[in-house]
Length: 81
Image 1 (cartoon, helix red, strand yellow):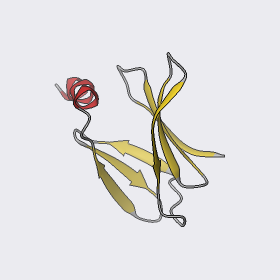
Image 2: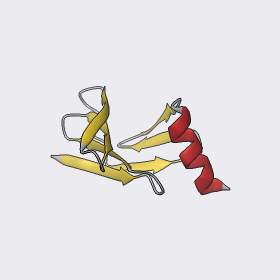
Image 3: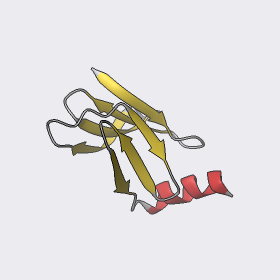
Image 4: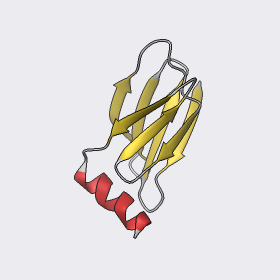
C-alpha cells in the first residue's frame, strides 16, 4: 500500500513510497516508473519534503537523498526562483 506521495509541481513527476519501503519516481503522462529505490526494510516513509537539491524522507527519523538528475533539479530550481 502507498504510504506517501509527492507530486513535483511544474513537472509530470510524482514520487511515491509504499509499505514495503520502495520509493518510485513516476512520469504520470506516460504512466511509467522512471526509477525505483529500495530502502532499509524497517523504514516506513510517511511523508516527503522537497528542498532545492534534496528529497527529505520523513519516518521515525529524517533522511535526505541528494538529487543528481539535472532535468529534475532544473524543474525544482524554477520553483525556488
